[in-house]
Image (cartoon, rainbow, N blue to C red):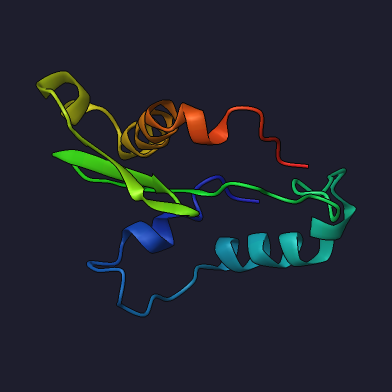
Length: 114
């Protein structure tokens, strides 16, 4: 398996272009197709799981917003400072959720995901 099969994707000028897959990429895809079921894994969300609250959020390079689904009138807005704006989009997305949950503690306190 080649460690560099992702270069097939990187060579494309846009996400919408069709790409040609190299022989090493085709071998890697074949490997995963044949072996993915052999992984020692478990379900992340048990079938008996029930969520009593759902938090939606969105973050951009300038700020974020989040709300608890069952209470749309409880919306949290935040503008990033210079340091936060420089952080990764993953950081900003997670921070949006944290800020939303912190501003709605009275709505989520005592609730579990089971």
